[in-house]
Length: 240
Image (tube, rainbow, N blue to C red; front, side, top):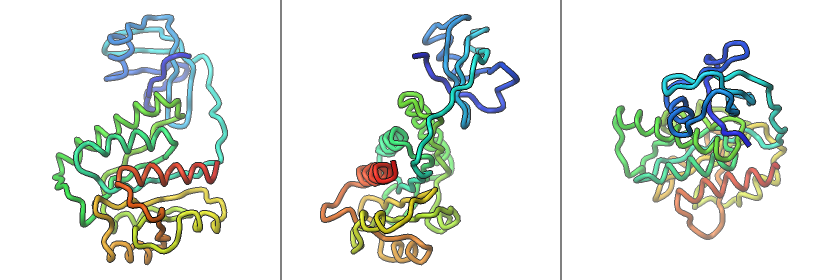
């Protein structure tokens, strides 16, 4: 199997794809690939098998041989709205969510967040998380990376629509499986995972008022970095 590399849609010109930046350096410097080498290019919604025609650390040009049809899936488009945990736990959450097939990740700002983020810190963290998502897509052979969105609070989150909206809350009475068994197969799902310490009651009520079903995963209290991955796995199992 050929190596997989990401390319932006604007870097595709006719039958040729140009790689720059980190991807070009990886191809030409790290892997030492040369003209004639075969690679797979991942563009938004498209996958191409290509042959390298030019290779340098600044620019790699590959010619498209054929488009690869992506396998059909019955999995809904899943958005994971994950409260940002301390340290680098978010890196692992992003990686595992991408491996499972989550389409979008929203770093969530909640009252019990436990970390303070200024604008520059937010920018650098989001760039790192997107890089983690990109790497996970290439490793797991996903058709395209999950999109890591700008961090937002619960008020802003209300603007993201989905056919099925779920929030995990330890005080909820409804089991997760009950909500899934009673719902018709949705085309899109958003699931909210609270921070270490959980969602505050007011936050949970606000989510309910905005159309979210408050659910529980059972008697055990999971860490925030565990809950989101488990919930995404349950959704994918239910609808695959």
